[in-house]
Length: 274
Ligand SMILES: C[S@@+](CC[C@H](N)C(=O)[O-])C[C@H]1O[C@@H](n2cnc3c(N)ncnc32)[C@H](O)[C@@H]1O
Image (cartoon, rainbow, N blue to C red; front, side, top):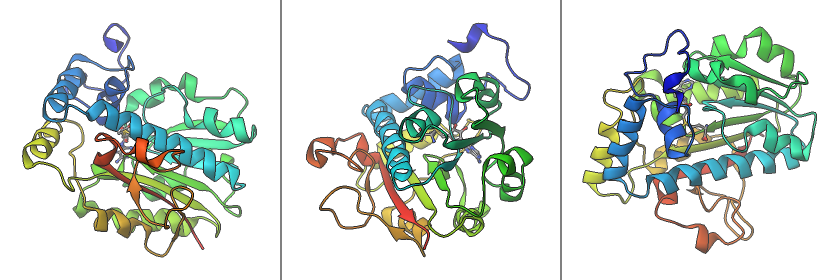
């Protein structure tokens, strides 16, 4: 656990954060008592939450790998999370070793624990930045150094837009990032949803974030689909129609077996910017 380690400036260990709650759900050790208490609260309301977290992480990795296989060799990973098994650059550089990855997260602990997120050969970087500040992120000198905007980019926004309120215009923000990217770029996105869930489970889930650094906003499938407006969705697996699916199913060899209760908490999709 992180409790014994020095705490970076800007981190209040008494306030749970999405990055550290997610880290605990993924069996990581970069979390504090308040994060573990919030995660346990979610587990009471949603017993399958660990499966949901792993399912989302699996989607993140499969989608990033698939995008690299389409010839994309540079990624912006916004809301990247704390280092875990199979970080983005590790996954994509297995396909194409020189792939550039810029990680962005607004939790200072992500930047502080960035050692394992840096490939050590100048191909990766970690920025402390907020998704709601696209000019700050897109104009960051380190991002401009690693990302060539004349070439297509993989924009990864997995499990992060559910922390952006309607008042912050999440659709306008995604469109703003996409406008900057060359045609042929890809967006990979997943989002929590209360679709087909019991109100008690949703309420218990949401309540765990009431006192956290970010609040939680569930969105129905149609609202998640809106993030892909103007883009070309790709089929999530062989034989499927090009549409959103649950995270476990995307890229699954056996979509029936992958369709677990945990997976059904998040809609996801991958789409190409024409
Ligand atoms: C549930 S984790 C998802 C991590 C990773 N993308 C994945 O799917 O495995 C959400 C991450 O988004 C980050 N986050 C939340 N709101 C953010 C914002 N406004 N700007 C940047 N990062 C944010 C959190 O700190 C956390 O690391």
